[in-house]
Length: 180
Image 1 (tube, rainbow, N blue to C red):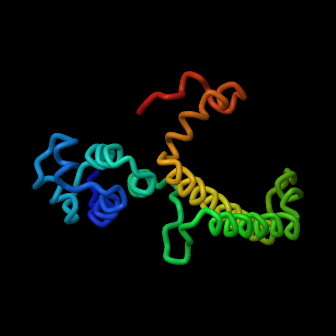
Image 2 (image 1 turned 30 degrees about the horizontal axis):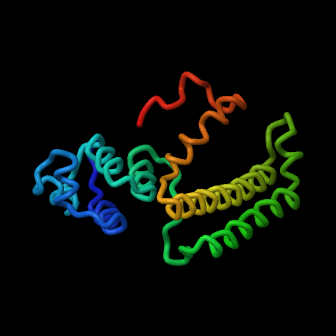
C-alpha cells in the first residue's frame, strides 16, 4: 500500500515550525525525497509513520492513522474553534445532544433487548451512535488542543496515564508501551 499526503505533511511542517530540510536531516533522507512527499508523490506507510513521529504533531498522526488504518481523527474544519474554552463549549453541546437522543430514543431498552432489532430500533440506535460519534470526536479534538497547550501529544498523555489503565485493568500489561 502506498499513499500521498503532501498537504498533511506541509501543514504539519508549518504547525511545528520546522522545514523540509530539517525533516530530511532528522530522518536521514534526501531533501528531494521529503520534497517529493510534500508534493504528493506516493510514499510507503513506514515513511509516513517516520514523518509523523519526527514532527511529533497530534493532528498529523491522527490524519495518517485515518488514511492508513481508518482510525478516528479530530475535527479540523473551519467551524471548529482553536481555543480551549470554545472547544469545551462545543464538547458540552455535543455531550448534551448525545444524552438527549439516548433518553428520547430509549437506547438503554434497545441495548438490553435480546430480540432482533426492529427497523425503528435500528434507526434509533444508529441516530444515537451518530451522536455518540460526534461527542467522541469532539472529545478527541479537545484532548488534542489541550495536549498542544502543554506542548504534548495525545500519545504523550496516553503513555503517562497508561499505568493507571493497567492498574484498573482497562489495558493488559503485556500490550502496554509496545512501541514508541
